[in-house]
Image 1 (cartoon, rainbow, N blue to C red):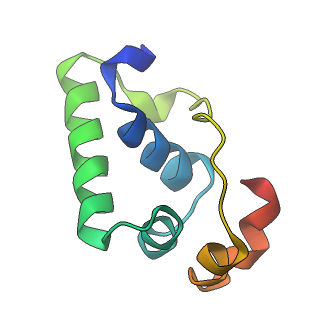
Image 2 (image 1 turned 180 degrees about the horizontal axis):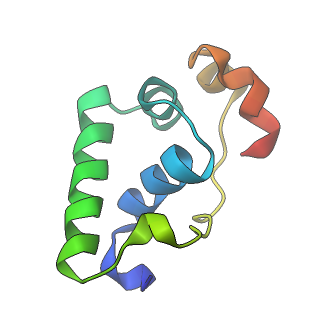
Length: 87
C-alpha cells in the first residue's frame, strides 16, 4: 500500500488495530483521543484504501513511526500492559 495514500494518524490507528490487535479503547487511551476519533480514523482509512483499489487487510501492515507512551497511558488501556513491550 502506498503510505502517501493515508495520513500518519490513519496509518497509526490501522497498525495498532490490525497489526497489534489492540482494542478501540486501548488505542484511544494510548493516543489520548476519544473512542469516536479512533473509529473515525479507521473508517476514513478503510474508505481511502477502498477508493484507491487497495485491500489493505490482505497485505501486511508496516509499523508507523515509533511513538513514546508513558506507563500511565498504557495502564489506562486495561489489559494493554501486556502489550507495552510490543509498542
